[in-house]
Amino acid sequence: MGISALGIGKTVGNPPVRILSGVNLDIARGDFVSLTGRSGSGKSTLLHILGTLDRASEGMLWLDGSEVGSLVRRDLDAFRNRKLGFVFQFHYLLAELSALENVLLPAHKAGAKARCRPRAEELLRRFGLGHGLHRLPRQLSGGEQQRVAIARALVMEPEYLLADEPTGALDSASGTAVMEILRDCHARLGTTIILATHDPDFAALAPKRVHMVDGSLR
Amino acid sequence: MFELSLRYLSARPRQTLLMLLGVLLGTAAFIALSGLLIGFKDYLVNQLVNNSASVHIEPAKDGGFIRDLSAWSRRLDSDRAVAAWSPQLIVPALFTRSGSSAAGLLAGCDPARQARVSTISSYVAQGRFADLAQGGARVALGAVLASKLGLELGQTVSISTSRGRPESFRVAAVFKTGVEQQDSLAYAPLAEVQALSGARARINEIAVRLEDYSLAGTKAGAWSRIGPDKAESWDQKNANIVDTFKSEDMIRFLSLAAVLLVAGFGIYNVLNMTVTQKRMDIAILRSLGYGRGDVLALFLWQGFLLGLAGILLGCLAGWGLDLYLRTVSVGGNPLGSGTGTLAVSLAPRIFCEGAAFALVSACLSTILPAYAAAKLDPIEIIRAGAS
Image (tube, chains in turn cyan, purple):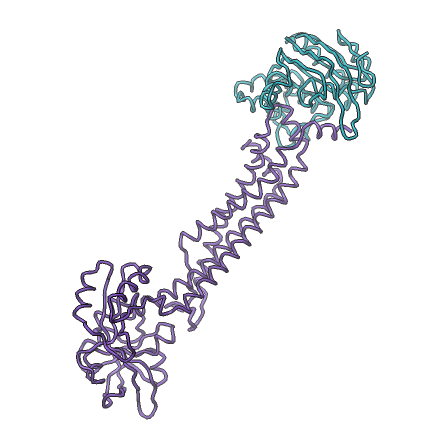
């Protein structure tokens, strides 16, 4: 169980531009892996492929023992919904929904809104947002919004948390707080975390580190 | 998705209102226009059918008489589709009063039977149609004829036909249907007219009212084949007017197309814009495990809800407009019903048509943007958003 990538490559556009080539990666359950590299080195693309948002042009990817190429879109949607949590550089909250409603979006899709509500509230409180449960995203600061987005990624208690530069748009205090949350999550829930970041200090927090250069692992 | 689509709609009240107004106005306009056109048509049909009759049975040759009244009597009495029938003798006559004279048709009839065949008695403005039966030489005049001669209730008029001497008739009733042709007629008891025109015990027309006037064509055809007399249905007799109904239906059809366009374009434009504005939301929802179907539903719900709300309000507005139009006075012109105001139909059929087509239009114009939203690739949006 876990995520295994074998010879993953990715080209986009026409004429094709190569973004990834020959990526082999094994991530076991409970791992905390940091993915470093300059911007444009392919971190985001690899993360998107691992998270089934994007498809590899070549190579094979196993998620919990299932080969992604053999799964239909519906299965992938369900996998993302129940097993994966995404955190992006920008928070991407739905502006019309309150913090709590945003957190509950994955649960809503899974039909577990009522069951997940206590956990959603607890997550938000733990992230220091107890006062803002019913506020709209625009009434929260950037750091608060990102913490809501992380709570959203965690509300289904996913096996995997994929974080793409989660601190990239935050000031250093907020960034540190977010990193604390990720570490806490890994330590307490045993969530498998893959963190793409170009900040060497944050990357150093991860027990396992992978460095990318021009679309390949070094 | 239903909940989220409601949020989307309420988060942008101005755009929502715009889309709502499109559907509302389209539906209301269609209902009001249809109400007017169908009201006018119903009014005309009512005039044509009920003031005369559904089917007229006449001798095959002009100037002849119905050959065998007793055979017709048996046939019509035993026919369950026939509601009532009235034998008539209709002759051209000259109406004279103190120097002024006017030509017109004089219809001899049994007043009681005639009242059951046509609605003529309900259009009587002065006097009573039934008073014709009180004996003596009495006549009911159409308003046009009466005003030509300056005649009023209770006065006498001299009537002559080509076959006999003039006789004096007392005006027992004046009726006004609003149709000039009808209002140039005069009715008198059958026996009086037969005596006046020297055609004793003869009739030259049988007016038949059917339970369902739409059967008139079939019935008329069947009766004509029996011969030797010919039977004409109201729509054959008034073919030119019936033809105009077709152009009315065309106008309604075109106005319906306008409803489709107006309501549809509003929704299509705004939803298209929404899809563009909400690209990031779509990508997020997809990354959280929402499928294409969910995204499709998110936008379809918006169009459907708007359509539904717009239709309900539009029906109300159309209804109100119709009620207002009913109070608009059109004076004495033929558009006027008995009360001199516009005839506006409030038939449920109109509301159903308007609602059904507006809903179809709302849904159709929603499908394209919704489908485009469902087809968006989340990774492309995220990639574009990040750079």
